[in-house]
Image (cartoon, rainbow, N blue to C red; front, side, top):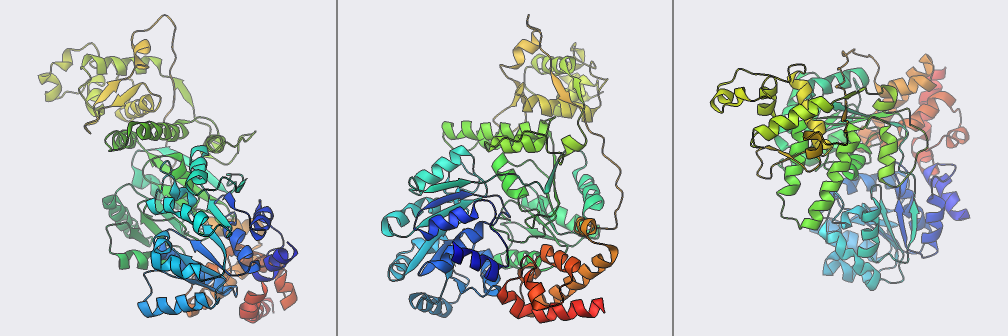
Length: 607
C-alpha cells in the first residue's frame, strides 16, 4: 500500500484515498476478486488503475461503450500511464499494432467492449499475455433486473473459468439488493470482497415538478440556475429530443440532439462537442450518458418520468462528478404515469418480471409524490439510512402542502364507476367540471349525478388529482393503450364509504415561480462562494489557458485540469513547481507538461 499511496500522490496528484479505495486496491493487489458500489464521481477508476500499475502485466478493462474509450485513454495518457483501446473504430492495421504491443507488454491498461473480449480471436490473444486483472465496469449491465441490461455481460462469467488466477473487479454506481445479488451470481463472484459505499451525492440538489408547460418550466429552471452551464436534458422520444433541442437553440442556448435514430457519425460528433466545449447542452434519450466522464455537468433535467429509481439515480448522477454543487430537475405528468404502466403491461416479458417492473415503477412514482425529504427516500431504496432530512431537495427547502382530498377522490372514482370504466382522464374531467360537450350529451352523461360536481377544481388540478390517485393505487389504466381509467380493489372501500373511515391526503399543486434571469451560472456562483472577486477573475484566466491547451491537443479541457484544481490554483496562486505539486489534482506528469504554462500565467496575473 505504500507503493499505492506513492502512485496516488505522484501520478494522480491526490493526498489521500476516499471511500473504500484503499481497501479495494489492497484486495486487488493481493489477487482477490472485488465487487464495489461507489457513487458516480466517487473515484471508481482509481480502484483498478492503481493495481494495474502495481501488479505485473496488463489490466483489461471491459467497458460497454466504445464511444467513450478514446477520452478515457486520453485522460490516462495525460497522467503518463500506458493505455490503449481495442475496438471497431480502429482500422485493421491499427488493431494489429495494438495486439502486437499487448503481446509485448507495452500497456498498463487496455480497454475493450464485452463483445470484443468474448471473440475467440481476442481470448486466444489474451491467453498469451500477462494479465494483471480484469475490470468489469458498469457491472449492473449483467442484471435482467437492472436498467441497462446487456446479454454479453452475462457471458463474462467465463473469465472465472478461463483465467482463475487473475483477480476481477466488478464496478457500478447503481444497484439495489436484487441487482447486486444477480451481479454476484452471473459473474461468479461468490468469493469476492464486497464494498458498498454511501449512495449519497450531497452536492446534488433534487427537485421534481408537476408537469404543466414543461418547456417553459425547463427554461425557467435554466435561467434561474444555469444560464451558461453545461448540462443534459433527457426526453422520452426521439421526436421530443429533436424538438426540445431546436427550441433551446431558438431561445439562445447551444443544444445538441442525441438519440439512436441519428447516424453514428452525428452522435459521435455531438458527444465529442459536449465533452470538449464549455456550456453546451445535450438533449438526449437514455441512449446517452453511460460512462460519461465530464466532471462539470452542472445540471441534469428530465422532461419525462424515468422508468425506475435505478435509472433516475444513474442519469442524475452524471451531474456534479467534480463534487461541486449541481441541480437535477424533473417535470412529469399524468401521461407519464399511464405510459410507464402500459409499457410494462404490454411487453413480452414473463409475469414475474412484469411484477418486479411494476414495483420499481411504483417506487419511482412514490419518490415523485413524496411530501418528505427526497434524499432520505432515495437512499432508503438502496438500503441506506439517513437520520435527518438532507436540507438540499425541493421538499426540504420548500415543503409541499397537503390537503384532504377524500371527497374529491370519491367524486372522481364515482364518475369513473358511473361511466362504466370506459373513458380516459380528460373525458372524466369534462364530466366533473360540467363541460358543454356534444359527446357527453350523446352518451347521456350530462344526466349523471356526477356531472358538474367538481367545479371547485380546475382542469389542471383535476389532472393532478388523477395522477396521484394512480400513483397511490386507487386507479389503474387499461392494457390496450387507450388510457381508459379502471378502479382497483383499493378504490372500492373509499367509493362505498366503508364503515372504517378513509382519508386521502394529496399534495397541493405547486405554483410555478416567476423566472428571474441570473447573470452568474451555477459554476461561477460556486466559485464565488470560495473566491474573492479578483480570484474569480484569476479562475477565468486559468480556465482560458486550459481551453487553449485542450484545443491544441484535441482533448476535453477537464482532462488537463478539472475546475476544482483551477479553483484551488486561483486561491493559492502557486509561485513554484513545488507549490504547484501541493495543488489537488496536480501530479508529476501534469506538472512536467503544464507546470511552466500555468506558473507563467499565474505570475503574469499576479504582477
